[in-house]
Image (cartoon, rainbow, N blue to C red; front, top):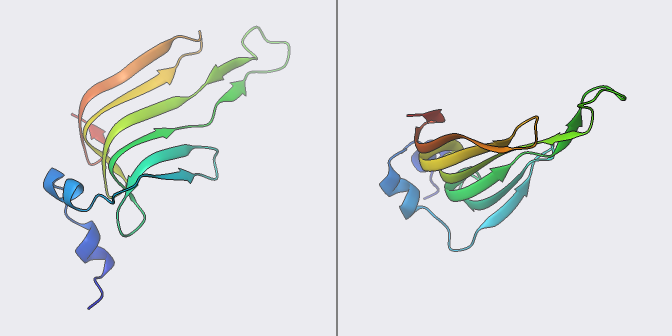
Length: 113
């Protein structure tokens, strides 16, 4: 019998995250230039341990003193059905090119705790 999406993807407990983790990580590339390396569930959603890094980009107007500053965001931690869930750390490169931590701790359904 084939399971439905809901049978695979509704349980957000950490036990379920670990039970459904495949044996090998995957690398996924987003249309926005982001890259995810980690585990996915049977539905293809980020699930288990993984890292998502947004694309680096330049911002500002040409000639502006800040026009060539790279910015990006990175999350490393646990996922459940495509959402940040469990222990994890969110970092970003600030406009003055300093790596800063936004949140280092628990996440619940995409929200820092």
